[in-house]
Image (cartoon, rainbow, N blue to C red; front, top):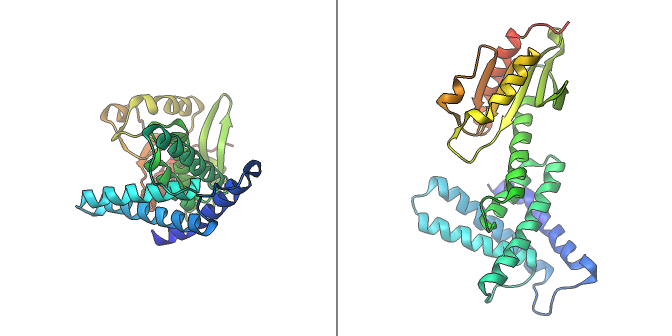
Length: 268
């Protein structure tokens, strides 16, 4: 957790510098200095990080909630450059929305540079501050982060494989396609799915399974949740599913790709 916070810390300096330069407008007299904003940003990241850790590992939910709220307040101070002394409901929501926009902007930059650890910290902070959990931008960036992490895990396969992103076959596009050049170009299509629920339903897997079957490609569905019983019925011998939550699931991911490559007919 400390390492992730350290890697993300330079983003707060960028936010501070950008805010000071926007349209030539400087901080109001009551605003925080750059050093104070940077310190608030680091304290905010620390509070959100420790609070997020406590959600899973601490029974003191009241203390965990307090840490998350305090961390979110410090992040708001860092992004906006003003101390939170008092604010009405409407003004606080506006300031919080602006802070979330800044965080998602920096997360987008981190994802473009494939800095997944930094993007994860920024998105965690944005989710804690978002007025609505259903924020469309946050959902999109969360998916992009998950897809990048899956792609990185696939790239760590202990064999020489070619990995293509957004690979198109005719009218169908797959998130990833793994090709084994040493085995006559055998291929496996990979579709990445995320859901906020506990299970991945039929509607999320039916299309890619049908497309892969139409093309004669084995397909692997990778998701952040378990597969529903109804959806499992759509999987035949040339389709597989892996629930991937992090590096500890990469062995299962690699095994599934290997099994599908073994049954893939040669493309030549």
